[in-house]
Image 1 (cartoon, one colour):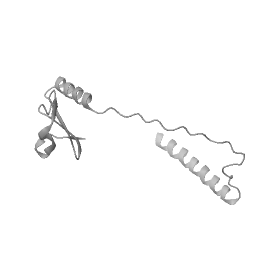
Image 2 (cartoon, helix red, strand yellow; image 1 turned 135 degrees about the horizontal axis):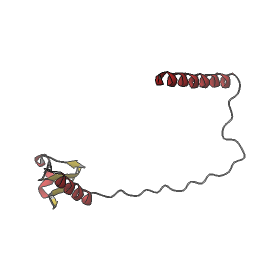
Image 3 (cartoon, helix red, strand yellow; image 1 turned 180 degrees about the horizontal axis):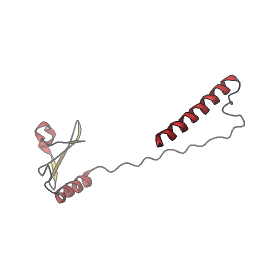
Image 4 (cartoon, helix red, strand yellow; image 1 turned 45 degrees about the horizontal axis):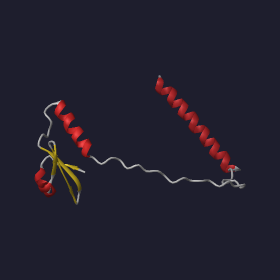
Length: 109
């Protein structure tokens, strides 16, 4: 979608349809909009221009995702970490938590 302040750059606007003060046309680059009342002079003109544009705008298309069914399984999907790697990761997690608490407390003072 293009809003053209200078309609000379868009050849699609030569055959543009008009609703109120808005002219619009479909082209290779998408929908092009222009208005002879641009920029609006007061809030009422801006509101009228916005409402006209909204009435011409495509409504959003609803998208419903297909349902997803999970089949039950007796086996675990993941094995829990064990050994030295688990201890290192747990220590790193605790250190990050302590560091975050210290920095949060220092920032408050």
